[in-house]
Image (cartoon, rainbow, N blue to C red; front, top):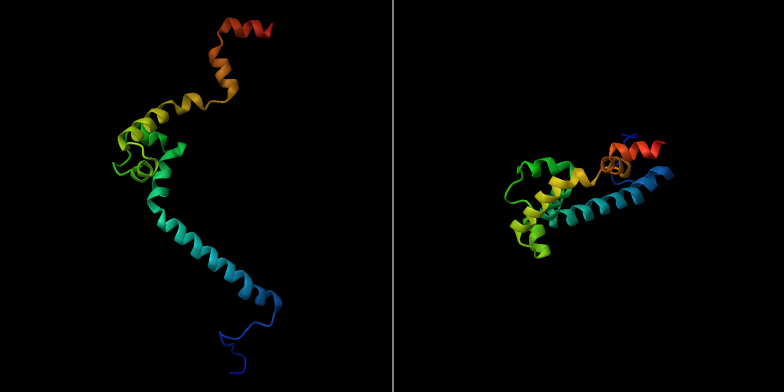
Length: 119
């Protein structure tokens, strides 16, 4: 038919031509590069998730699998059980050390000291 467009035909519209020839090529290269990089480091990326504070509750409750942090332990040359122990300890104290400075200051002051500051 006269109005059909072949898939191999180059687009005539400049915006469409840019999209096909430049933009899509860049996106394809990025996708391929990211896939290759993260596929090779899948176990490391999986281990790194346990270092995020949102997972500290699971760590405090000892809900992480035995395979967690294996790759990180290997790469850092730190004993796996020691790494787990340190992470559990850090997860346990994280809430105390991550308070805003004002909250830490107020918690450390006695009521008398606070009254003296007000007066």
